Length: 187
Image (cartoon, rainbow, N blue to C red; front, side):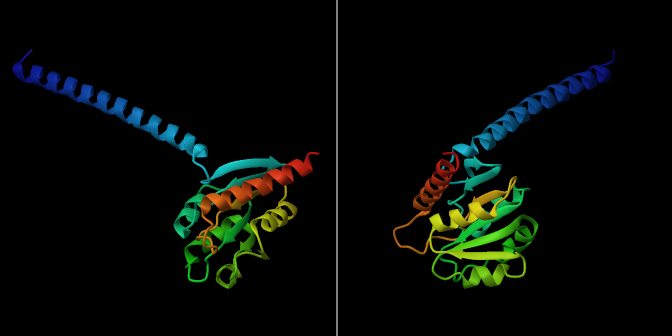
């Protein structure tokens, strides 16, 4: 074997070894990414599964206090959605959510003191829009509206309009309301 052939073989072996090591590293990274995504349910109030009541899935996404966070959530949904949103919505630009709403949302339930911006933004995109005075009332409405294979999603897309109410408080209120309905339903 000539020197050139040996050098070429050595280079090929090195390239193959580098490709193998890179592949192993990428597989580890892919697995880490998969594991992280699978652990998303463990992150409280972010796309957190709460219950399944007669085929309707309830999710708490109260940590999504921005349009971008809610957009990301909608990007991962394929089933029809009864969406509970609102809070300090007066000056929020919801226009980035219109395509997602057209595609996924069958009903919007607005919570908060001033829902005019939400209602104006989605008035032509969503056929059913309602207002609720509280999260509990919104969950009650959603439980009546939602049908089997629907998702009831609490993803406010804005901060609370109440001074001492953060996403944790609102998420807990949502979860408690869902659990109450679940208990009433299965008694």
